Length: 177
Image 1 (cartoon, rainbow, N blue to C red):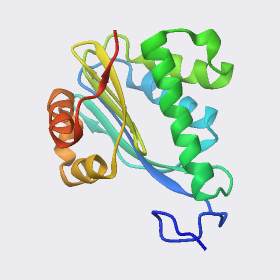
Image 2 (image 1 turned 60 degrees about the vertical axis):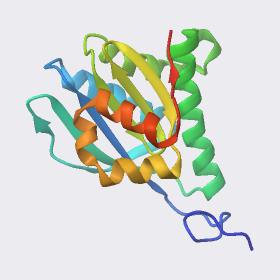
Image 3 (image 1 turned 90 degrees about the vertical axis):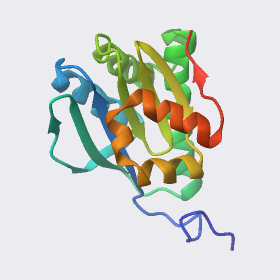
Image 4 (image 1 turned 30 degrees about the vertical axis):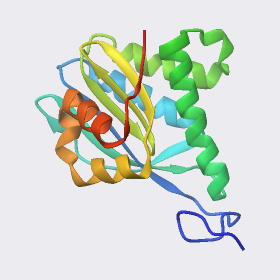
């Protein structure tokens, strides 16, 4: 049998978890951002498994998200790819009508909630949305980038530095116009 990056049979059904976090650098209504973030997870059949206390000043909160139902490794990877695609459609093409209504609406709410925040970082597994000086950037993180972020958690409080370091680690992101 083939094995997955998780080390088990990729067809084995288990409730998979993924790290998720939100950072905004200004004092806006973080409750609206958090509600929109949870709505995004829900739209992709994920739920909050664990919530960590927020860090005040700016606003940063870490979560562990998990599949609502057991999923194979390929199904879970596909779900994260769909989140990345929905973020790209909302930030690059801005054509919500082309995105599934529930998923598109969840992404739109999250981006709207971040509207007045010039700098933010949102991560769900390997999908990363970084907003620097009001410009959103979406990327699907490589294993090297994920490891770099895990080893440098302070980057979650400095979106510009995080974007710069990720570009150094593994090449440029897709910038939204």
